Length: 422
Ligand code: PLP
Image (cartoon, rainbow, N blue to C red; front, top):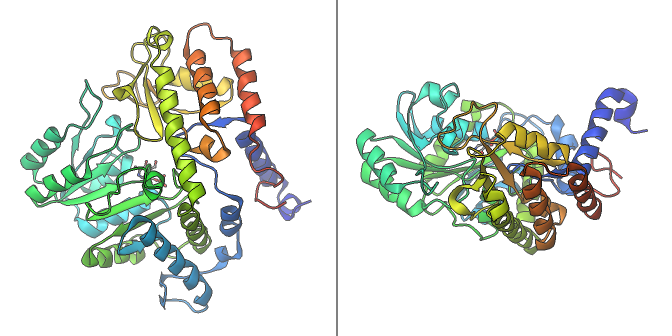
């Protein structure tokens, strides 16, 4: 028996059941991934015991000589990976990284221009009841109804009209690449700072398969747990010395107390792996998988059922499905796929007539399955399964059997338990 099973069998059971679920279901939530066992080991380590307020070499606690090494490695690796001069790797999550960014470069009451939540933006980009919407004066741009793409003319018009302090480029649900150079041009025209939130596509950037926002933006925030596939957490990079200084004090003591040193060590390992050839090859499979999925969902049988793909394809790791003209809504589609053991999330589409708990869309991502080992053949199979599942009268038993076959062929965390231990 493991120590956890001895001490707390109820929580041990949760861990085991969750591992079983991750193994048996095919994970297609666009923001999720599977960390390597090495990252699990670092994240589940004795570094969780250590207080280390401050930064490497400048701590407010004794005994930081070893955790300093871990944090310095994480910083150096983040800088190298994204071509940045400065990195802060302490944010506990993407949302706290974003709070620190605004804390560093704006003051409450300043105007912020970001992508609206229901057009694919994130809560921290100005949602009304989020800190961002409460503290700042938010103006939102959207996507064009016909093309589903951000309309840079609209961004420019809004920027000129509202003269924001900060312009945010970044998204949680958007299937295309943003034009960072054009965003910077607009920011310069109106005297705004450009903040890019690359939480979703950072892994693609690290692999050189997506434009790098760092040369264009004043500041770039990210999570580590989406396409990068590291521990749940955030980080921030910049090339501007004065902004770097403000960011450091915005994260600590502005935003947080003691950093999570076990997570920072795991981040360092994830950044190391993200510089490898294997990582690049995995991101290539991720992108090809998303394109295969989009292509299948644009075929006639799906289109005839009123189901469409936003922007007619994808450049990234996710596909946005529009169900406004379909017989099922977002919630029903999510439940249907859950029944055949595919996990996705429902997602609002622009101008969604349904409430956020129901929605008229699905966001389907390929990073986790690429990490599991899927290539073109398996993505072709899963794309067909999803397409057929969404059509009226689908044979769910047959589709569930096809899912099980794929899951069995690509075992997750073979030979280890829920903490990564043999
Ligand atoms: N920024 C973007 C663009 C995101 O999509 C997300 C997560 O969904 C976040 C920030 C927040 O990350 P976290 O959930 O770690 O707070």
